[in-house]
Length: 184
Image (cartoon, rainbow, N blue to C red; front, top):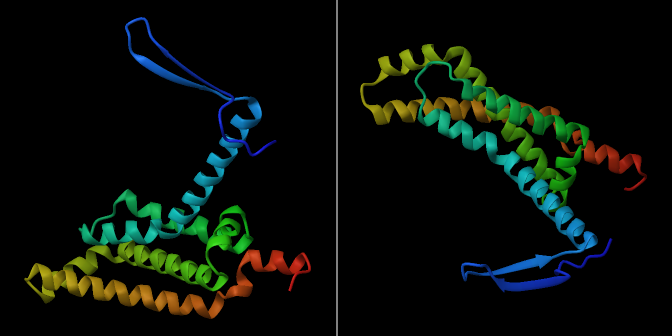
């Protein structure tokens, strides 16, 4: 397979109604190379998005918090859980991410995703209690949001701090794979 990305032939012409067109003809090797590059770009973009998907969704959930369960809540443990599992096993996504970010930063993102799971767990289990308690504390909407975000920020930071007691660079699957291959 070559790394030629240019078409074999470029055909210019006009249709029967007078509109001009351009068609590119690729040989199989060139087309396969383009498809492989396309797959690689999608894998890298998807991996980078997966790191931050749960925190973004969590912020949107917290802004629209009503105290009631929403099925969108399930997306956070699914996305974060897969990301954490991938990092623990050293699968493709964490290996791709390791090209762009250091292992310490990957551990930080694992902690962030664990924090997202902890916050969504608290919101799911105690959402109605949290809402009623905050509503009794203040009548001002801005104050309620501030209290809610500070409380959930505390849960987030506490769960991240606890996760760093158990998760470090040696916990990452890519580090274990690297050591198994005999690299230091």
